[in-house]
Image 1 (tube, rainbow, N blue to C red):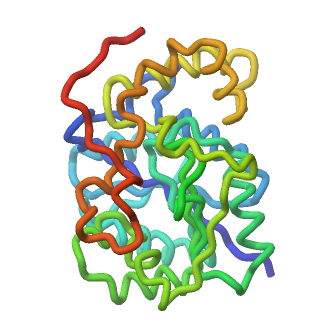
Image 2 (cartoon, rainbow, N blue to C red; image 1 turned 45 degrees about the horizontal axis):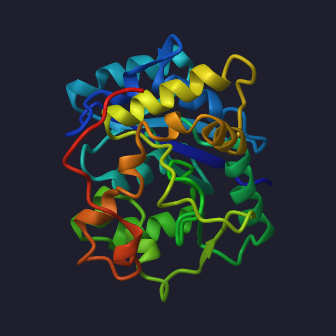
Length: 275
């Protein structure tokens, strides 16, 4: 029997920097819808589920998921580990992918490559990602774990950052889990120089511009095509370049054993305008 793959898309309306970002419009559809459209392009057979919270603010996410035709699971607001675990149990998953909803430019081919690596080494790894260490442009985050691995984390994780961010208990304890990493085959490392994720208004302007430039010609545009566009039109790269390398690690660098200070950057205090 083939493993049942579940892709969990974590989404919520609350955001201290850009509230409601998953519902922002991209070419007439929500950012969440555009991201799901890309996830549905992967070659591996997988069940998709949007995992949001039980708070009233997130009713709109359930409504949107239903409109897209994707099931929605609702659970804890702040305990994302529990939200992933409960969704995985509900859908009888054997393999769980964690994909945050702030990655609408994620390349389906990259997801397939990481999945190929995981299954080529099935039984060797409990957890495989392309983040430890990261090499792809930020916003191509893929984390894959066996249900046994996720269950272990759910049963034993206690620190707030482990509960909020789902997987730190796993990759922070390499003595307990067999961990694999898939590096960008190009040999390049753009993880701190290129930002394809959304957390600030400038990120939205950047992502919306990428879609306007590439989507009409090819709705399955790749990471390579984005990079080619940025080389041709550096003004697009500059829209959110000041936030490159800014990630959640910066809030927990003193707590993390396996992440060094050069893998994160503090957010600038000034902003730039849409270009």
